[in-house]
Each structure stands twice: as structure tokens, then as C-alpha cells.
Length: 325
Image 1 (cartoon, rainbow, N blue to C red):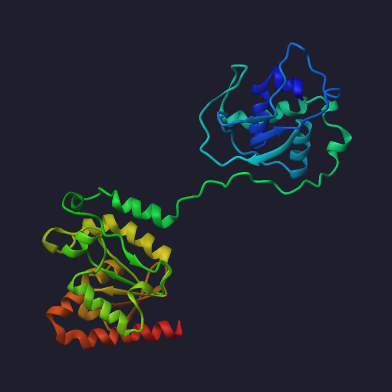
Image 2 (image 1 turned 180 degrees about the horizontal axis):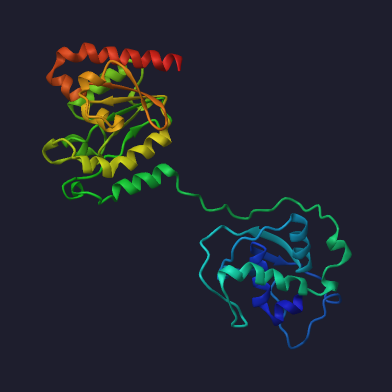
């Protein structure tokens, strides 16, 4: 195999790529058992494939892979981190292999290895040691971080031109209770957090009355940007943000959702009914089937404190539902 490395490293690299190997070491053997031509420089002990072009992953049994590795004098190898295949691969022979025939071509030439290279002991079952990972695999960005970045960079509607910053959401990412309002206000737009103004303080008091803290629930809005002058969200704006909110609900997987105000309730339930008709009863958020309770928005309660008793009825029902569900 050492002569093959010296004469055709490109072909060896192609075999190793087909085997899914991104790093390997050549076994050091006594000079008497590995004859070398004086005109050929010794092959390096460690060969890296940083510049090698990744090939499609090929399924191969562990025994067959071990046999090929041993025949190629490889003692240490690491699986390749999956990447998007390139459209073309240029080998040393200047032959271009197209992606759709790449796998077939590489393994058609695999049997051309000389029989002597596959000694009887190589074909026997191999009790190989577990793979020795010499470096950690790159971490995949968490779904929450990806979603937050998508929200921050959103330019889907006209609100991106007037916002100070987006307001993503806050609270426990595995909360049992999720509270959803309609849109950020001036304080939220300035600080980047939902429900931090006067209405936010009232909401905190309502959550505390349930025996919870803001850190134990998850709070979000239908819109992630503040509408100018705190006007009501337009239907097209809510539609553009719907995907973000749906992903937040899917990630949190709450046991109960509370819709704060008419706009949030109408958006989540796809209805035009008033909050007076929607509150006081249980609904289901489809398609997940999550129990949903609609109640008055804290900002409305600041203007109409006489409605706080009805809002407390809704929250009491939520607390009972959390206790039994």
C-alpha cells in the first residue's frame, strides 16, 4: 500500500473519501518488510485530508470497512463531518466524476485491489477498539438560537423600517404555561423584552398570583416588531410573523396557552369573535390540540379595572387545568 500512496495519492484519497474517512495514520512497519524504491521519498506517517473534496456517504458493513482500512495500513481514522456534496470532484488523473455516478464508480474499482493486499487475517472478524476521537465534532446551533437570529434579521413587512429592535420572547423554554400577547409597545421596542411596561408589571402580578414567576412561564407576542403608535397589527403583518410564533410554540410545547387580548385570541383561533365571547371557556389550538384560554389584555385591565375579576376567573381555570393535566 505504501507504493500506492507514493504513485497515486489521489486514488488513495478517493478510496478513503468513499469509506467516509477524514483523518488517518499509516502503520509504521520495519524497512525489511516494506521495500521502497530509492527514487521514491518515504510516505509521511500522518496524512490529512483537509483539502480533500467530500464525497457522498456510502453504507458499508463494519467488517468490510475494517478490512479495507487494514489493507491500506490505516490504524487511526475519524468519520467525516457531513457536509453538502460539491457538484464535481477532480481527481489526480484529471477524470471528472459526476455526483450521480460517483458512488458506483468508486466501488466498481474497489475490487481491483490485489488479492495479496487482503490477507486471510484481514478478512477474519475484526474486534476493533472503539473509535478514538481526537477532537470534538462541531456543535450544531440550537434551534432557539437559529430562530432568534431569523427574527432579528426579518425584513418581511414594513415594520422593520420603524422598529428599534425585534422582541423575540422571554421565559422558560420548557414552560408549562405560555402567555401570548398581540405586539410589543414602546417600552418593549426599546428594551427588546415582552411585557416590560405598565401592562407588563400587571402581568407579572397576575403570574405571581398563580404561584409562578415570570421565569417559570414563557411570554411571546403575535408580532415581533412594534407597530407605529401602538396601532393594531395588520392581518398581513400577523401572517408574516405566524411562522415564528408557531415555531416558538412547537419548541416550548406548553401544556396550556393563555391568549392575552382579542387580537392574540383571534389570531390563534382564526376567528373574528370578540374577546367577551371568547373568554370564559376552553379552546384548542390546532393542530397541536393544546388547551387555550383567552382573557383580557393587561393593558385593557389598566383602563378597565372592573374587569379584573373576570380575568382572575380565567387565570383560576388555567391554574386548575395545570394541576390536573
